Image (tube, rainbow, N blue to C red; front, side, top):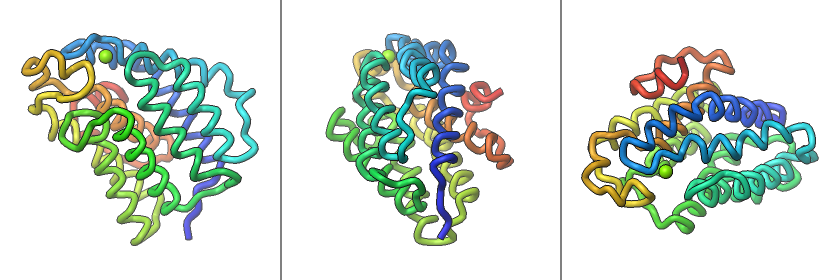
Length: 225
Ligand SMILES: [Mg+2]
């Protein structure tokens, strides 16, 4: 069974910090199309702290590390994203206590638990035009590969495809949750910045692992250029 090492998880988080910091302004610009324009800054404020405190973060095992990251995200990511993203990392931490390697099935279970936690916290469901519209199809990809070929590279590529596809599939929807819901119809025709962030993070993970993949949505192409 293919294992994902703690080192690979650490590398994925470091890559995520770089993705978020590089796109601070772009993600806020996207949020400004229908929301209050704070998403990029909110996310970057938290991930900048993670990046700065990286060497001090407890790395005894994956669970300890994710727990610390969930606390930093909850504390420092602003707006509505802090509790949402913090809950996601917290759920992942709870399932990896004491582990220094995880299987694809573990990763699928972590994301499934994160999705449940985020739904409980924010009340959103599939089709509400939130980051769940990216996370739920990515979860399906993880489950399928965990039960099938167990190839981490193919899993990552298909996960990036699923999140990328979610951008265009939800573009015409009207947001029902989060700040974008307050402007109602104005959100139709604009991408959800949370979905773009997830797709961009996965595309950068592909790049970091040398997995060739061309982004489909214009936003991902721009955010990873
Ligand atoms: Mg906002």
